[in-house]
Image (cartoon, rainbow, N blue to C red; front, side, top):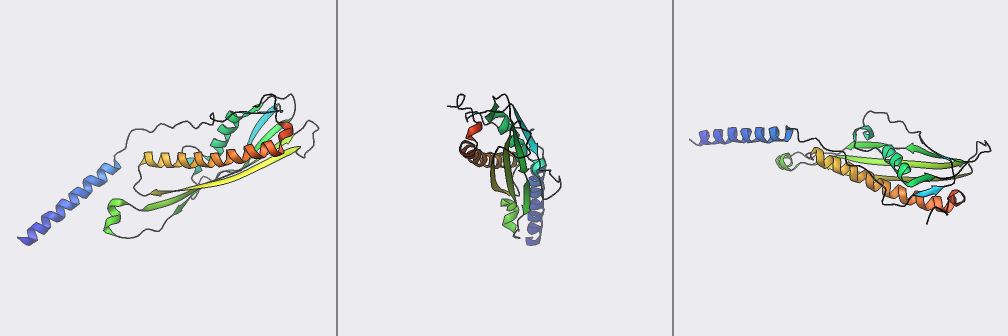
Length: 206
């Protein structure tokens, strides 16, 4: 009798686990890509006639790199930042915005064995996003030397639980990139007004 009870309990536990796994595997509704915006900041008007974004960084598109698999890569976020924050209002000169690094890498975290971890989940991977940018102004003299330049570099990390849903992962990645761009924005704005002031049109900027 006792053995029969144990047997029934075991099969009930297996059935419950099957339902749990099945429910976790069911695809949820498609997640909309929330737009990334920097319109909360005032635009910076520059005495240049052209602004170019140059991506020197080329993603290897293989692990541990995952920037091509998240909602917004650092390079994509930087491109949006340039379009929304910088304005070309001059008749000459050229600004190059060079993305030197825009990697997002995933690192496996060690896991502890145990029955409790099956239900609660454990930290699965640590993701690190890095963005390194350089800005160079070239005048019309044709010189290979830039007339002014500034740079910025920042990184942010996030750790995700192995049982995090698709939506939770999307939100975590977006938060990581938003925080990364907040750091880059502060550095570039400070450095531009400090070292590139001769090419900022203060008649347009407050």
